[in-house]
Image (tube, rainbow, N blue to C red; front, side):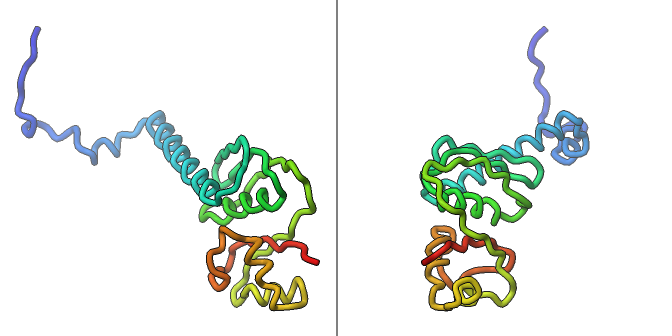
Length: 162
């Protein structure tokens, strides 16, 4: 018994990264998939946290391309902003909303931006007045940083205005 010394660089090249990648057991694949899912959850949670909204008991779960979000929001607008922020992440096909609202109010409409759209064009469609684009812009902050920077496929909140 004892410790035997060898030259680290000599001998068969079995323990290379390439070989390690080709010999993946089902357990290794499952562990890698779960690690990737956990990393995605951290990133999705970061998307919500970056909004600066107060969502109590926030939990985010991910299965395939579906995000499930839990918690309590103070307003319907905050709830909708969380849903839109998560839904507008590439690779997410749908958001399963499990957020309750402390102060319920009527929900806003959602609109999917099409090619050639602008906030003023959308405002004209919903409100009959293109100059009311600011209401849409404000309803989608902090997700929107500039009223001129929207893209096809993006979902937006269209609030009811008087």
